[in-house]
Figure 1 (tube, rainbow, N blue to C red):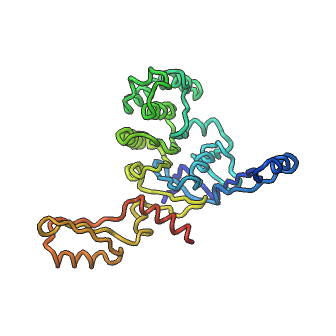
Figure 2 (figure 1 turned 60 degrees about the vertical axis):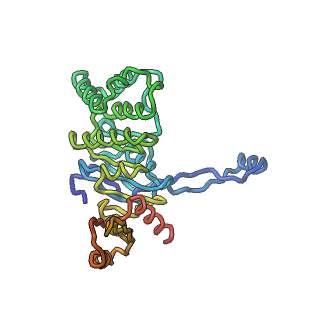
Figure 3 (figure 1 turned 135 degrees about the vertical axis):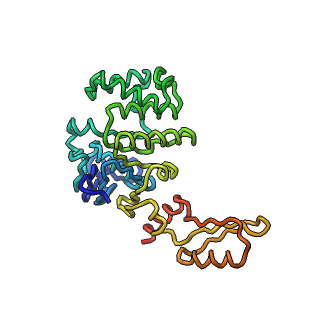
Length: 314
């Protein structure tokens, strides 16, 4: 677990939204003009965790689980209803300039660059906003452009780029000030497999090169498995699991899958209780001539579903 060098600290953090509530129909609409009824919706429910400096953590959960709301509170876009959070020693809600210079929030379904301008012009605007000296700015910009292979794209208007191309130049724009903490909300959403792989490779390289701390949400488990050793699973605003990705299956999956090639090439697949894996493997080896054998945990997507199913049952 993270130590005293934690970059992100969250303690009892909650966010409650007050939303209007009324019945359908003209009469209900007229009544709401006089007396508006509201109800409270708890999006994030007293969550606590820490993330160490340089750590890459997956933040997993279904739509509506509270992931994006948490990232917005940690980046200072939303004020928490209760609890406390610090990022690099700053309280995000205070939106201090020194805090904003050290973090970035990338949302895969949001466009942050100027739509009708080439990305290079938006990069120059970001340089001015963050007050980056030109001599420092150019080497960082050129390095990021090279790492993501967007040299031919940054001179085109953003509206002329494909979704994958736009996402790559968006990431360049978000990292020009070389942030120490990255909040990434579905950075590969809607991209093809090749583009997803390129962005994952880039993020891993950025983390290693600059020691950046990363909190990543993604519905693509390949992103999580490639980048994150630790995951936090959230559902209905509450944390269900916080630990090593490898330990997730041990805790929530009650079975393993044994695959074997035997005899004349026949393939055998067995799904056995986790605590019976050794006995089942020994019986298989004793009863058959085994040419190949693998024992695997269920796919991480299945394990995550088991986590949610258990929480719903409880």
